[in-house]
Picture (cartoon, each protein chain N blue to C red):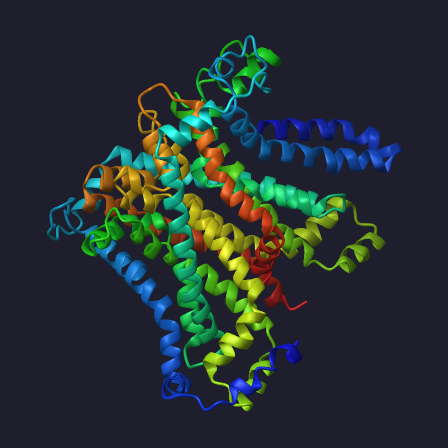
Length: 318
Length: 298
């Protein structure tokens, strides 16, 4: 490898110009290398984050500079049943969808960890729902959930004769809530499965061989080898999953836009409706900011809740 | 989901008999059957999308006389309507421009950043790395309202340039993280040899480190491209005029008019909008899967 990359020696030895020598001055080079990335993140991430928190304490509307009004936005939100509803559904949505994604994703990962023909092709196929733009697959779900022409209703009513009438997927609150969660789980399974598959492949086969010699059943092998060995990776993947499920926007916006009767609003869609569509930037920002405590709590909970087991083992020193 | 649950209970009830006499039958029930169900459910929405795109309207809304799972007389009418009666080609072009622009910008910024953090070791470099990584955990849903005002201040509202500049905020952390891992895997001795030979740092980066990091650059590029093609909330909030919209936003806001949905055209639009990423992804699927699994292993 080194042989093929070093024949450029002749060119390298040419006396470098002043500009090249400036770039060889390490502090300058470090600053120049970090400038584009750090600059972009400061201008379009850190500054807006600070600005968003500031906006949450003002009464800014679109086209009009606001003034500081203290906690008024938050006091208003605490009295707003729609905000409470969004809080409830965001937590419910995250909890149920995360549970579904991890249960099914873990199962799929265990299945994919076996040997069978066309393994890499099947892995590639399995990732598709995760690759395709969420809004576009959400539209497919919207069509699948159509009140009149739903293919699921057709199967249940005309093929299997399990029901007499079409299912009203998106017309009433609870079915709509569960329909969205099902779509979210569908989209989330591939990422969970592939990430956990990576974790499964790092577990040494000798552990299983030793357990088999000791006469462990397949359930015992899963319970005492696979599961504990997967804890660290589960903690990371779950933390990510919780953050991005809790702040989800696309699926709900594409399928129900928060309806019927505002029952499926997540905090993000409510923030959009009030902040951008409604023009109340200050109030929208307050709703967005109100996600932060939940996010911090969920992150700490999932990360430390799952990682704790590892520490305990370390402390026990066995 | 419900199908899977039903299937698993079938498996459980059928398992004890088959297990006893044939391990091959057991494999079928325990592995192939559930796997087939997963694949069926994961792929069904795409099949449904595709089949709806080519169904004539008469078949589309008549399940009594036509089997909904098949097309008897396929038509290109929906695709034609999409391509010639709407601004769809324009939306595709904008989306492509934004995705390619933000991918190149992010690759440029994150390659330099990853090189500085991993190879130019300085006091505090781990903290800079951690800071960039933490930026990935700030979700767009929290940022879009203040970012909209920043975009207006910069005079970039309703311009695709705004998206090209904003998308790197979630692409750079990811790519930097990925590339730091790649740079780590390149032996430092190679760079030391070049330094001894009198090469400048930039020459080393350009002629030695980058060529060896090409697989990492490719996977970072694919991730960036698919993530920016996917992005929705910023594109929805920052772009106003119909002509400048990206495909996901335009389909949802421009193609849906009134109460009667043109499902054929909508699904054709979704299918066509999914194809570029799906094709791009299938070309580099091995890089994609290995870097995804590699990133998680780190």
